[in-house]
Image (tube, rainbow, N blue to C red; front, side):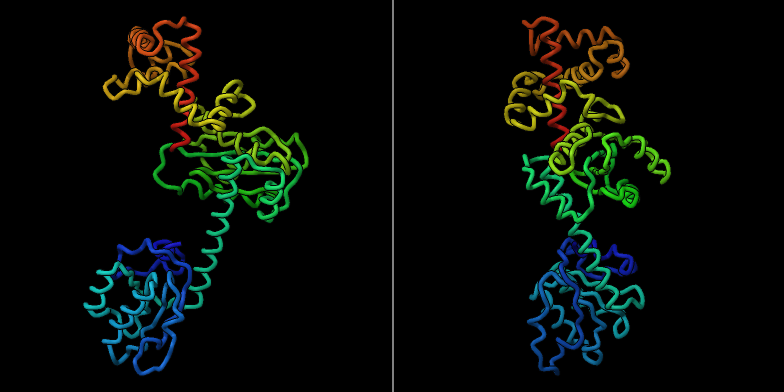
Length: 385
């Protein structure tokens, strides 16, 4: 959590940043109250108690008759590495110019309350948000490990226990991504589905949504059920790509389900289809496993085979045509439609591509190797995104 997140809480939405706007990235780990700690009239050791990375709340009562106390207070908070000062404008509506200048100089945010917000409620909402964010980060970390690492049965059992959910014998997973989006707002409606899962979770990982559902039966029609829920909650599927895993045993194969859904969604994006089921990937499963097991080898293979098309001096239309040619499974007419040109133009480009990368290969070998290299190239590009 940072100061910017703090300002997005329901209770702080009317706060105003009056200085130090360049410091809104500062982390927030605590919220504390400032009463009279920086009044020279009070003998106290309170300044040793303010912790770093705290948002400090105050009514500025300690400086009621002495505005010069404010400068010393802000200096001290900066030295103590507080994240921000938020004040209620009951004593001071506006702060002295020298205080604001100091805050600006040190990128120290000073926030003004929007109304009569209670300190205690601010603290409670902030801590509740932080706790939720911690759990979200924890789940995302687990999901990332399930995708990227070869985990043991014991690790899976440990993950399931730490998720603190009641899981059934079989697990079904969907991975969902929105095309061409600049923010994560599209994800929020999917969390409305979590109460329907009963024995599952909705979480984010790798800029996408994962929906895990467990059930006592292998015959659960997960895709049908998910589509019904999306319709019920009026969640649009326009621009959305979904990858579905096979059904797996939760306690020992959770990582396979998560991984299959993730890479199925990747392949759906590559094939430009709205959905993809891992069980329908056929030989593409081999490419996925090869990429997972030995990414450096894959990158080297792609660079060597497609190298002539990847050079900056080469017409980019050639690489794009090769990609579309593979996606359209060699259908010249469909490639031509996709590139808004005549089929003969595509034939000319494919001849040129072949001359550049494989002049001695026959048709079958050329298409096989081109298809493999292009799919691995696109898979790596998607993972890198």
